[in-house]
Length: 215
Image (cartoon, rainbow, N blue to C red):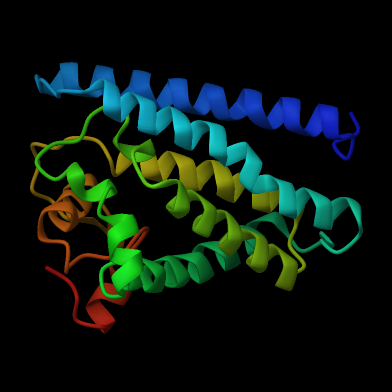
C-alpha cells in the first residue's frame, strides 16, 4: 500500500476519522448507561461535532504535502522513544496552549465554545469545539513532526493514544479522583470545564503542579 498516493492516504484517513468518531459516540453512550447518566444532546452540538469531523482530515493536508515533498523525514528512532518524546513534548505544549486559550483574548473566544459543556459531558463533547481549535492542534502537530525526526509508527501510536485519552477525559464521572498516578482523569478535566482557570493539563497534572494552576 503506497500511503503517498493521495487517494489511498485520504481515503484511509477519512475512514479512520469516521470510525473514531463513531467509536467515541458508542463508548460515551455505553459509559453513561453503565453509570446511569442521562446526558442531553442537541442538534447544534451534533452539527458542530460533525464539522470538526470534516475538518480533521483537511488539517492533515499541509503535513501530507510536506511528507511527499521530502520535508517530513521519518527516522529509525525506536517506536517507544518516539512515543515518550511526543508525550512529554505535547503534554507541555498543550498545557501552554490550553493556558493561553484561557488568557489571551481572541483565543478565549475560540475556546469558549468547548466550555459550553461544563455541567455534563455527552457523546460529542470531545468534538464540540470551534473549528479553529482543530486547526491550531493540527498545526502544532505539523510543526513538531517537521522539527523532529520521529519514527512513523511511534507517531501513529501517539495519535491513537491522544484520541483515546481525549475520549476518556470527556466521559462523565461519579468518582472524584483527579489523578491516576501522574495522569489526569475525566473528573480532573470536568473540574477544568467548570472552573476554567485551573487544571489545564492534558495527559498529566505535572505542569499544573509546577505552575500552580492545579485545583
